[in-house]
Length: 247
Image (cartoon, rainbow, N blue to C red; front, side):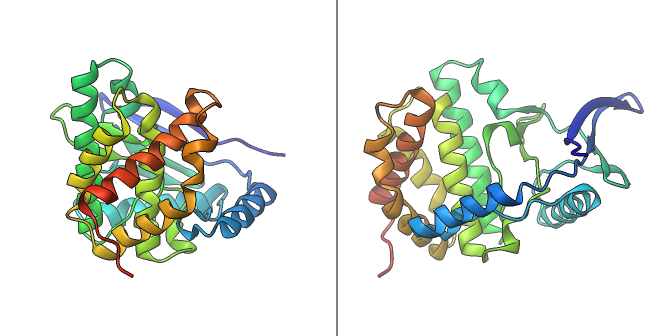
């Protein structure tokens, strides 16, 4: 019987927390198709990581949280660990929730803060995996944090590809929320990426070159699809503004 993952808000000693129970759905066929597609496109940074189930997923997320916390990345504290279950401390509302509420200036500021936080993770020699707006948080004092680590890209790719993946995932996920054009997005990304390893910037450049067709293909397909093309265009603008890929 397939059991879905669930996340439930609870109170622990009067403080908000989240009980995460890991399901047993593996999605092997879907992941195999996606892996074949990204191999065909020649974008290794987008290879899907293994989909773990049950206690394997719990162990993967707990391991990744400890790794990132050791590098001073803001991640949820583990309050309890059990069979296929973690209880995680609350680290603030999501970036997605904030972006739905703020004006254009506020959205630009939050986007820049999140991009800078990802760059700091990379400068520390780490990677995230799924830095989508729903997995990025902002706490009461404005610190940017990160969620959702039960899948580990490091199992199928090296560090430079995993970091390049973060920029591809982040930019494509946030583009639909931003009232900014590609050039302004690109300038903000370029400023943040100036501190990341050169090999990561080079890998982003290679990935964007392979995905350039999305800029034209997605334009007439609606806002959600068009945000993919917008993200590719923004990354291209960032690379053109500040980065010189290696041969």
